[in-house]
Length: 92
Image 1: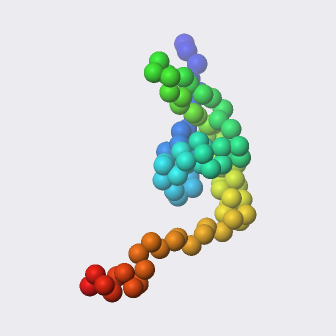
Image 2: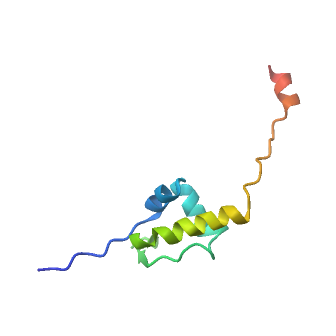
Image 3: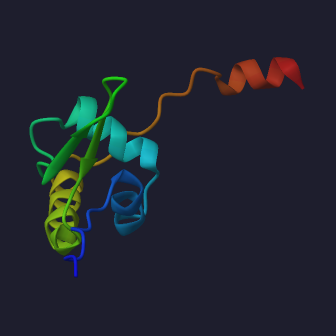
């Protein structure tokens, strides 16, 4: 009889927990918040050199707390409009 394998979740599951896209989670992990996101529990290296990160499912609360903290610290800036109302009037 074999033991059950360890179960880990990836970026898509974390994204569903937080109500964001997988791309957003990937961006946080690799660029914007790389030093503050919860560290993975496992890193799997592939033959091609890619890495697959995994977190224990019981760390959901940690991710939710991290996400709340990020939004509490910095309110989302208003998007810059590149097309002005004046431009739009000229196109209509």
